[in-house]
Length: 146
Image (tube, rainbow, N blue to C red; front, side, top):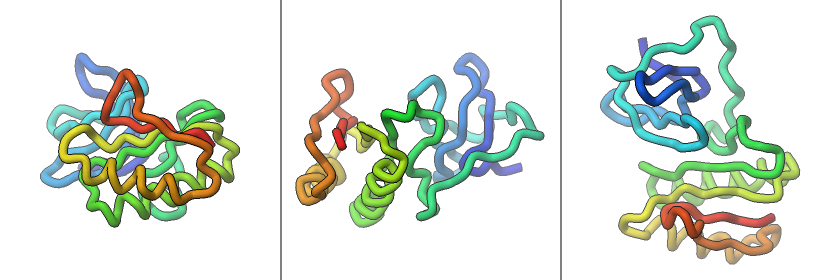
């Protein structure tokens, strides 16, 4: 049975997490303990079949996570085209502003840099963005202050 964004899943030796996005070939982006990783469906099992799914963002993207503290939000842009990433970024920033988040963490990855470059270019053009910087602990993440 396929998984959907918001489903609680358990991965042996890693723990229980939330499906953030559906990828190709039976792979899913799963958040476990504040980290997002791509996992094959063969390694996952449902954590609790009766629990309700979490709400998705209005844009349908996996966008802003509801499990983060009220002061921060996060979005994972892995696997997206530049155009999809910018659209998801705009929706995430909008949702974060509406939820009064002070910070947004944008996970764009380290390789290539096309998405990171496009994200930074877009952030410079957004008035609500006070500042942004690469996370010193993870070069694949940009931290945005709103």
